[in-house]
Amino acid sequence: MSDTPTPSTPSRPFVLRAAQPRDVPAIVGLIGELAEFEQLTHLLEVTPDKLMPHLFGPRPVAECWVAELPEPAGHVAAFALAFTNFSTFLARPGLYLEDLYVQPAYRGLGLGQALLRHLAAVAVQRGCGRFEWSVLDWNTQAIRFYEKMGATVMPDWRICRLSGEALQRLGETR
Image 1 (cartoon, one colour):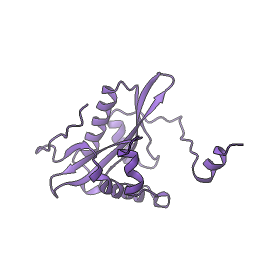
Image 2 (cartoon, rainbow, N blue to C red):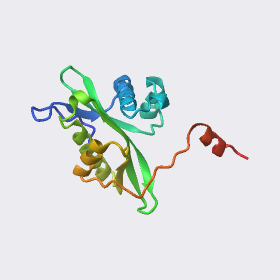
Image 3 (cartoon, rainbow, N blue to C red):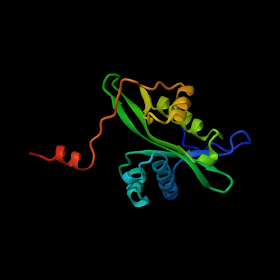
């Protein structure tokens, strides 16, 4: 899948393209909006300086795509950030969508659907066995949207996480 931007048309009033370093401040702003929506601003530590090396440094660990509107010129209204994971069962890489966010004023224009389709095409082109992401159980609108796009919400799986002090404790060498 090419990173060539898809032009806007009357039926698609936005450009979908790979993020560029100049987009990082806008992406960080959208991440802040997402944190507000998910009521998780207390966990927010992202800044442009913290995000930049992970997207565009010598060893990027994530990729990002944006939906840019022609009016107002250059406005980044949505983003999707993903990274490669691996399935031992399939013995193939996968693509994991960490976050997808569309500003409320621009929902219904097809930005989220275009981003999901694009990432699915990236996964297919790269030979991935899976394209996965998580959704909050209370976000029924997103769940319906994902199911409409063909996704299966995995009812028997739960996310496990170590962070902060718990991660430090477990990661200490003894």
